[in-house]
Image (tube, rainbow, N blue to C red):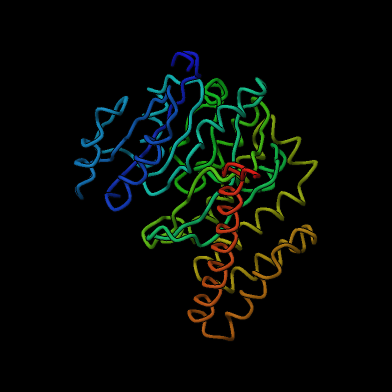
Length: 336
């Protein structure tokens, strides 16, 4: 095996606050990656739920950890960024998980092209119990796609530190779209590449902000849109692609409004998306139908049916993926 220092160092930061129910699983998904040159840091915001005991349990395997009051998620992550010494950096929230082999796959991708600023994989959405409820697959997108609010899965993103330092750390003014705002800046300092593998699990549970505060995402998405128009590099691209960017904004707003239970506002956003750029709505017609039906049918019952159906489809897809992976890994049968 090569000496450890011949593997590029990878720094992973986990911000946490009162997530004891999930924190140990998250930490083990990082520590058990098996990557020989891993720098792992946990930045806790002064938890009182037993999280600190969990962190102490693995402290001998951490490069650094702290538990102290902070100014929120972005502040905690930035503390880790400031201490990170790896060539490659990622962050994993304290209720999310890495899939086995994610780190080494990201390293291979980034090492294949020195012009890459970030790489990203696919995601499984899981609930509080770890049950797969959705599979999020992305495309090979670039800066223009990010400007159209094509979201990439934050837990499955790894950045080159040099690009992050040029872009600057997370902006503390953002609480919901902080990752999208960062990707837009990092992608100005290199290219992006999608790796069609599942690298992480994003957990959706009742206390997760993308569930509990879904309706707060749309206003902050608008702030990103307004910020874009004032950026010297992004403004010319915005002017060339204005209709599709606005369509992407309305489409993303509709998704969050739908997730937050505001079906009427979601329908209005879908209409605005259609008026801005009609083809953008086509992939979301099932969501449009769901939003419309929720106005005349018991929305809670309809939502349960919709989520259960999506979870069954996701679980079936994941089972097929695992079976395929197992069959590829199995040794060939010997012919007599």
